[in-house]
Image (cartoon, rainbow, N blue to C red):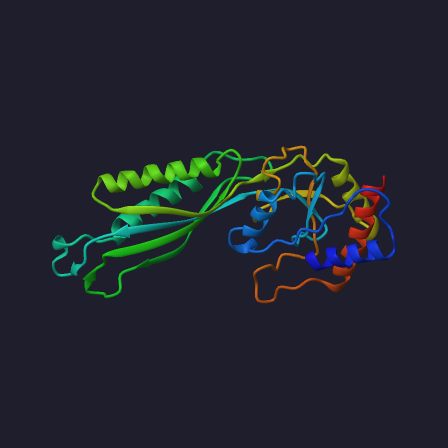
Length: 274
């Protein structure tokens, strides 16, 4: 998507297609590991005068106007090591961590809170490590989880609930710490802007079918870039791709890729020139 935008901008520049306005390329870094690049762009003021934003994530011939938030959290449980024949002399770091994760999975994944576009929050334990010898009570255990949040169940509320669960375990004798090392909010726009309607119209002309709007599960740089823009802001997450991201056979169809360059050229110039 980023390269397609660059090629589109080169063509717009070389053929003098832009008569009004400014087209800005914002190439971020670290999008997969905390979105540090978009945070920097936002903090440097690059979004201050932006009237519409297109993010080239691989949506294919559909436009995302909303996405869930994402939190990466780490739980560290401290115990007292001892021989497994005398467990009463130590404290098993794994046990309270298991209780915490079971409670968190049950609480978050069975919540009744939902969003009409994004659905429900999801909580997934993705890493678990504890102990290093089968006949020793472990003194340390760690687990990591990823939570996909929604406006109705936001990041701050999730963190508050986790801290309450941890406090309950610690009151019973555990020593569990929480580290929220990534927290990006959900984004929800209404998709009613002129920019979205134009993207749908131009996209349909190039591909010969309707271009629907939808809500995306993965988080994007929009979490940082438009966090203060409100639901009316023209956001289009629209780029060449399919359902193979993060798979060993990830690919983009050549015809779709080349069409997206033309779509970007037509969309950017039509929006800014009118």
